[in-house]
Image (cartoon, rainbow, N blue to C red):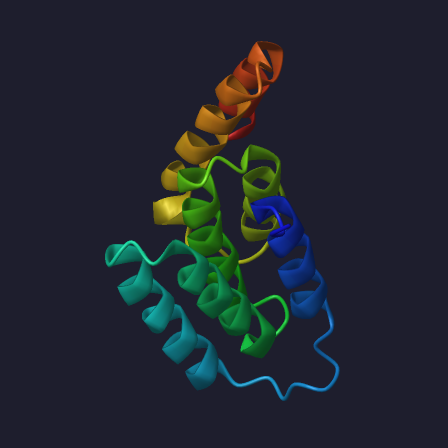
Amino acid sequence: MYPTTADLFANLVAKTNATAENVKDEAKAKSWREKGNDEYNSKKFLQAICSYTESAKFAPQESEALALAYANRSAVLLHLGEDVAVMQDLDRALAGKYPVEKRYKLLERRTKCLLNLGQVCKFSLAQVSCY
């Protein structure tokens, strides 16, 4: 039996959180994120998730690079229908240093997830919290 996307994601999150052995390197984080972007554009979604996870591993804590890695991974997860995982990555990106001028993208993504999850009440709260 093959693992589900949710299982793969849980494993990747565990790897992202186990960063003690990784030296933080913003250039490597950017390189992995760009690789993930290419894979996403080529519809290689599982590879893109892995690349964005690597980007997060190398990104310095509380950096824009870390927020971008989580945000980009959330886009792939949304495409795969993993709404709960999307919400987790969106929370991480929004809590971090995601660029203010691009936050609307994450709020739109969050709204889609909440609607997919049938959480209409939270939909209005998500809209209010963006101001």
